[in-house]
Length: 391
Image (cartoon, rainbow, N blue to C red):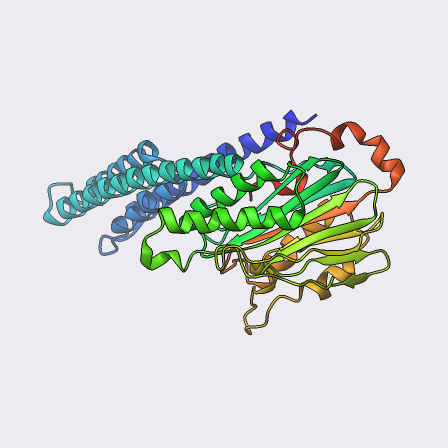
C-alpha cells in the first residue's frame, strides 16, 4: 500500500517536464510559421531565442541543446523563405541565435551541477541529523512522543538546537537545549552536549548532578577547543526532565532555558514554576535546583527552544505559543506538532530567523501504556517519531 504513492510521486516530475517541453517546441513552430507568412519587413526570427532560454528551467543540457538546434534550424528556414540565408541580416541572426543557444546550454550545465551539489549537501545534512540526534521513539515508558525541528540555515536540517531522550531506572529522561549561535558553527557543541547526556543520563545519579555533568562538559569544551577570545561566548541553555513511570510527577532542572508548557484537557495551559540556574558553560560548578510538579495521565508537556517564542511576524510581534497551543490541548502529540509547524511558519512568514525545536510528551493512561508496552521499552534509536521527519 505504501509503494504506490512513491511510484506516483516519481512519475509526476517526469510527466511535468515532458509537458513543459511542449512549450518551447510550440513557440518555435508558431514563430516560424508566422514569420514565414508575414511581410518581408516584419522580422520575428530573433524571438526564437526565447525557446532555448526557458528550457534550462525544467530540462537538462542535452534537451536545451536540442531546442537550441531546433530554433537555429527554424531561423535558417525563415532565412530561406525571405531571400536566402546568404544575406548579412540572416547571417547575423543565425549566428547570434547559435551563440545564445550555446550559452543557454552552458548555463544549463552549471545549473545541473549546482543542483547535484545541493542534493549532496541535503544528503549530508540528513545523515548528520540522524547521527547527532537519533529519531525519538513514538512511545517510551509512560510517554507518547512527537518532535519537530526547524533549522534557520538554508539547506540545513540541523543547527544549534538539540534534543534527546533515554530510559532507565524506571524513568524517562529528556534533554532539550539551545547552543549559542545557529547552523553549522553550533553543531560541534551540540554534538558534545548530546554525547554527554547519552553517556550520563542512564546512570543512577540525581537530575541536578546530571545537569552539573553537562555543565562541566560544555565548560571543558570551550576551554580546550575554542579560541580564547571565543571561549566566553560559548554556552548553551538546557532543560533536563525526568518523568517516573509510576509517579504522576515531573522532575526538572533548568539551565537558563525557557519553561515548558503543561497542556491539560479542557484547553488549560499552565507554566510550571522553575528556579533556573545559569546556562551551561557560563559558571562551571554552579548549583542546579530541582523542581517538581504534577504531570497526570492525559496531560501533555511541551518543551521548546527560544527560537519558537522569539519568532516574529511582519509587525515584529513574538509568536504567542501559550495562546496558540490552548486550541490543541486535547490533540495527539503528532497532531500538535503538525498544527505548530504550520502555525509557526505562517506567523514568521515562512522562514525563521533562529533554529526552533519542540517536543510533546504525552503521559498515556495505564491501559494505553500496557498496549504499547513493547514499543515503550524499546531502543530509542530504532523507532522514528512521525512528526520528526526532515522538512
